[in-house]
Length: 130
Image (cartoon, rainbow, N blue to C red; front, side, top):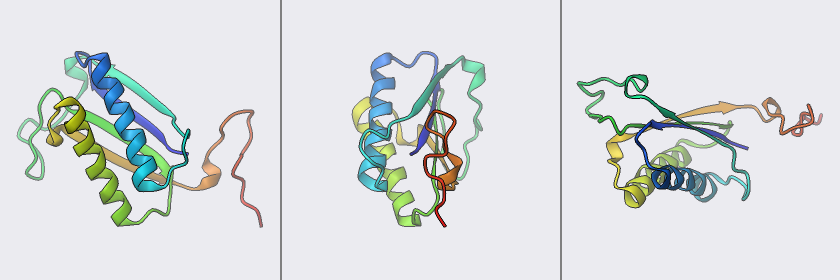
């Protein structure tokens, strides 16, 4: 039940956006045990002055105007190993399919409880059962 928010530069082609979307979803299914068809994504394009990153780099990583911000909200409980595998699969997959630099793939994960989701109808589909 992840929600992926993907932010890219305005000049990013539709083909590149589609490839990024596919890679993020595929990585969730293959590395994080996300169910097939559980694909919820919000993709936004931004003007040059709306994607802010440190020009000097950060933690030894330098960035370009092609930076891609990916934020995934998903259920808590995944191990550090799973998260590392997810980061790697996304960065390498996007690089392989689009040519974007792995350094420009910035990822943030937000862990939430299962009851923090409503998939429609104003219901808590994953309500705790005591």
